[in-house]
Image (cartoon, rainbow, N blue to C red; front, side, top):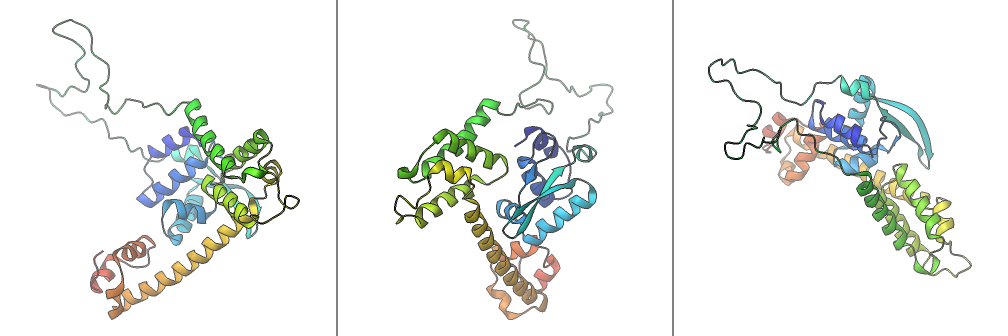
Length: 285
C-alpha cells in the first residue's frame, strides 16, 4: 500500500466516479513507484462493487491513455493475472481537483486568504493555517501504525489455522505477510484457511499439513483459485441475468415491473441501459 500514490491519485481528476474508484483501489495495491499491482479484474469488481463491463472498460481505457501499463504476468489456474504499474508522470499531468486560486477583483475590501495571526489581548501570533485550510497537509498514518494493522491481519490468519497443527509461528507469519504484500486479499486467505480446516477435519495426524509448511508451500493457492472460479461463475450468471433485464427495458416489456431499484442501479452502472430507456419503460433512473 502506498500513501504517496493514493494521495497523488486522490488529487487528480479522472473523469468519472467509477474511474476514480478503480484507480484508488489500484493505488492502494501499488508500491511508492506505482508498480507491483497484482489483482484480477474480478477482485477489482468485488471490492469496488462496480459492474464487470465497467471494470474491464475502465482498465482498457487506462492502458490506452497510458495511466496504466502492464509489467508482467503471474500464472494462475485460469491462465494468468496481469501485473500493472500506475504511471505517476501521466497521473501528475491530469487536472488537479484543487480549486483555482482566483482573485476577487476588490481593491477596497479585499478578501483575506489567511486567518488573522494577531491577538488584541496577549499579542501572541495565531496559527498560519486554520485546521481545515485547503493547504493543511494531513499526515498519513506512521509506518508503525501501518505495520501494526498488517500484523493484526497476519495474526488473525495465523490464529485461524487449526490449533493442533500450528507450528513455526515466525516462519508462518512471514509467509503470510509475504502473500499479503503480493496483493493477496487477507479476507480471501482467511477463507482459504477456514476451507482447509473444514476439508481436513477428519484427517489423521499423518495426513495433515503443519502451518509452516502449509503457508510456505502456498497450499492456500488452490483454495483461492477455487474461490475465483466460483466468483467467475456467479459473475457470468449475473451478467446473463442483467442482459435479460436490459432486454426487458429496451423492449418495454411488462416484466419490467419485476425489476428492483438495486437492479436498475446495476444496469446503469454496467452501461446496459440509458436513463431515457428506463423512463420509457416506466422505471426511475
